[in-house]
Length: 276
Image (cartoon, rainbow, N blue to C red; front, side, top):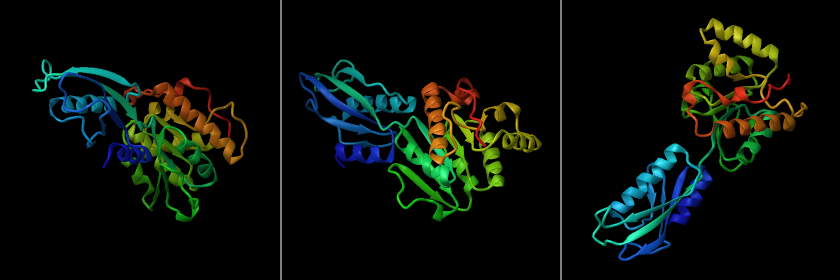
């Protein structure tokens, strides 16, 4: 696959990659300026000449992916002195991060608010998994980059998300909401957890979660009601905009931080919405 086809496919999937380009060549080098290579966490597409140069470029690109870097980077390599390649020239590489989702989001529920929210999330630098047991609740057209998941074992999908994920729960069933809440809080490695509902619903859920042995510190990180208080209204799209705003504020505040420390940047945000 050519680098441009690979890049288009990875962008469509929302998979992080780094585009590596030779922008300067001096002396004898394995490839000319303009040569490109696309590097993902486990694959490469095309080549910038092979050998130790390509190995070092792949290593640096994967470090950028792992750290979720969004910054372009220039690196000069002396092929003979530092890399031991026989051509002996020098080259400058440009590293450009591409397709790096700022948030991996699981949305549970394809009801009216979910149908208003998911297209908003899909337009952001986010990778969205939309989950419901009811096939007929999903719209005919799913936004590009959104993965639709239909299955009876909805709670099992919690474990399929990577550490530092965002979870939004808005299903049709309060008991299912409770089971999802327990599974998400037990993981403890979430960057954001929002549960649709009122303050009364939160009090009832906290009581039941205490009975299951959930820690107060984890329950304190749950956003219920969720959404930004400034965005008023109870129409599905108004609630969706409020939730999307809180997601944006959260990933802008916490991007690159280690969510495993148990502190959520949500605590720094505005008070929760008063929606019921």
